[in-house]
Structure formats: C-alpha cells, structure tokens
Length: 404
Ligand code: PMP
Image (cartoon, rainbow, N blue to C red):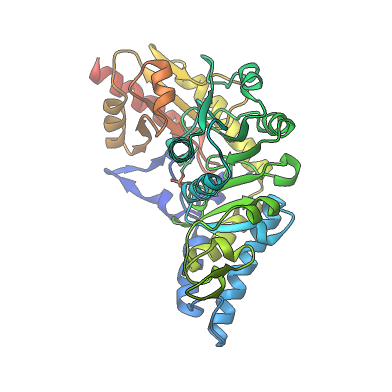
C-alpha cells in the first residue's frame, strides 16, 4: 500500500492553489507532474557537469557522456531490451513514430499495406498516412466497437502477406482502453509484418517488457512519466534499426564524411544526429528510478482503485455517459453530460481548481465514431486521491446545475 500523503509531498506543484483553490490535477494523460528529485536533478546537471557529450577529451564532457549512457542503460533495464544500442533517445513519442514511418519509406512498395487502429492519437495516424502517400502503400484501419475496444476478428481479417507494419497504441489516450498488444504482435508476425507500439500512455502505468512482447518498436515520452518535457525513447530491435536508414543527418551520426560519400555511425548514434537534450536524457533516468522506487505494482493498484471509485461516483450524475467501457482499462475516464458542451464543463471546473482536458484529445476518429465533438477527460495518477475525485464530482454537479 502506498502512503499517498508521503508520495504527494514529493510533488511541490500539488501544494499550489489555482484560481484560489487547491489544485486537483487530473490531466496526467497530457503530462504528469514532476517529483522534487527530478526537478533537482535538472539543476544539478547544469550546476555540476554541463558539457557536450561524446566529443570532448575533457573531464566534464566525460562525466556528461557517462551520465547519459548510464541513463540509456537504465532505460534498457527498465524495458528489458536485449541491447543498450536498441534504446534511442528522442524528443518524445511523436519523434519516434516519425523516425520509423520515415524509415519505412525505403521499404514499402505500392499496394503494400500499413495497419493502424481506430483508437490512435493523431501522432500515430498522420506519419503513416504521409508514408502511404509517399510510397503508394495502403492504410488499413482496425475498427472499434461501442465499448471502445478494437475488434480483433476484424484485425485478423485485415492481416495478409501485403501487411508490412502494424501500429497500435498500448493504451488509448482518449478512452484509457488497454489494447491486446501481445495477441496483435504474434498475429502480425505470422504474416511477416513488423509491429510498432505507441507506448505514450502506457509507460507511466506499466513496465513494458519489449522482449516478452516481442514488438519490433516501442516508443514513449518522458514527460508523461514524471520526466522532463522534450525527452523520449524509441526502442527498436537491432535487426530493424540496422535495416532502416538514418532519420536526420548531422554531427555524431557519421563514421566518415567526404563530399563523395558519407558512412554512418553504428547504433544507437546513427539515429542521434546533433546535440541531444543531454540534461533531459539523464534526468529521464532519474524519473524512471523514482517510478521504480514507488513500484509499478503499487502504482497500478492505486490507479485502479481511483478508476473504480471515479467510475462509481461519476455514474451518480444524471445524464452522464462514460465512453470506453472495457475491463481492460487504465485510470482514464472520458465522459460527457447530456446537452452540455464538454468545454463549458471544463472551464467552470477549472475555476474550482480542477484541471481536466476537454476536446477531441488528438483522436478525432474516436469522436467521429461516437458522433460527438469531444469529451471531458479526467486522467489519474498514483498521487491522486479519492478526496480529489469527490471534489471533481461536486464540481461537475455544480457546473451541470449552472449550465442546464
Ligand atoms: N500517442 C499517444 C497515445 C499519446 O497520448 C500522445 C500524447 N498525448 C502521443 C502519442 C504523442 O506524444 P508526444 O506529444 O509526447 O510526442
């Protein structure tokens, strides 16, 4: 059992007041808050070892390089990658998706097929559409049902020897549904297709084991898992990363440059052109240490309790509909109240100190499926409490009264 008050003391922002009211932060799906250890580690880096990496002979450069590479190893252990060089530092999930989609332009031929799902964030749709436009490949979509689940029998039918890559999120940001990724990976591999997992929403809730999953790529963002913004990881199997061309050209990603021909550096440097977010990469390791100290089992237990409590309490409100009703769900609740625009509810409860997200959550196809402009999304983290959920319920009731 977590001592929530002790955990909350790690996050200075949770003591802030917003609009004169204690902050209730339920926008964790957009970005998580940061514990003091992460905030401190950023200034410690700049105060004590700031230098460029992989290039200087001097001591600070060596210290910074070591810290950066230690962080890569931490990520490797965290996700159970076979090799540290399969772990690429990126600026976030979006970068990782674009890197792989861009690389597949050299592999796909006209009429090859790319499979995405109806539950994707725009980040995991648009780069693949661009890839299809460039190559003449065809984009296929796994449909969803009314509960917000992907229909696996339809997925099975879409797979064929034409399928070259399947891309799906581990957890949907708009509905919180946990997708059956292991099943999907095994099925895709049977037809020889690669599988990309968008782990933007899962990385804060679970510890992905990329070898057990046997996924070909797994991407996530540091800022959603207590780490700094502008950080992320792309895991890729060594064989795939060797096959894909570099994404960006520049310093650090080369072996030798002449005007006639350039040869590229070995992994992971082939994909890490230019000076990276050094402080961010190092401190992402600090964030992962922090989450592991809290413990992913504890995190999941607390979040599932919050989900169950919030589902029950919100269901008390007349005219409230929750979208995404699956037993495979994480701590995200997307809902609407009959006859009221989600934005209006969001604006009123903001005045009461409660931060939620309203709108289409960068997942317009899901909103189109339900025929709605958007939802109100409350996304919980392990540092949230049942008392905060009570505050949300009271605030939503108040807003409903004012608006109806
Ligand atoms: N995929 C999903 C499922 C997401 O929730 C997000 C962020 N909301 C992204 C991709 C993009 O992540 P980022 O903006 O950190 O690159």
